[in-house]
Image (cartoon, rainbow, N blue to C red; front, top):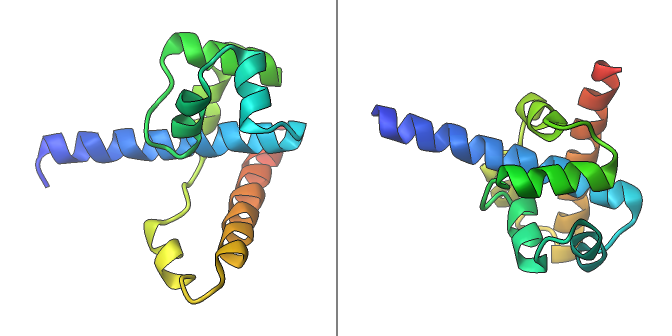
Length: 122
């Protein structure tokens, strides 16, 4: 693996982790993506891409997200770096389950992983 590949891997890891943190906080507030995007004044598709780990939020978007969920500036990045994203092969290992069961399973993994790391923090 060359340096460029390892940098991309690290960036992808951070994007996935950040997305999990944002999604966890949105679920905790019981907001839809549309409600959250309106409150944070971020595009719905942008917020959705952030939650899926496709992109990292820029500093401006990250601060808007942090403000809406009650985080301090920079806390989103710190919390994301503590996370272990759901392994890519998890979807492969659960593909025999119906789609709704897969979704619930993955959400449960994300929920418990985030709660465990948040509890360690406090």
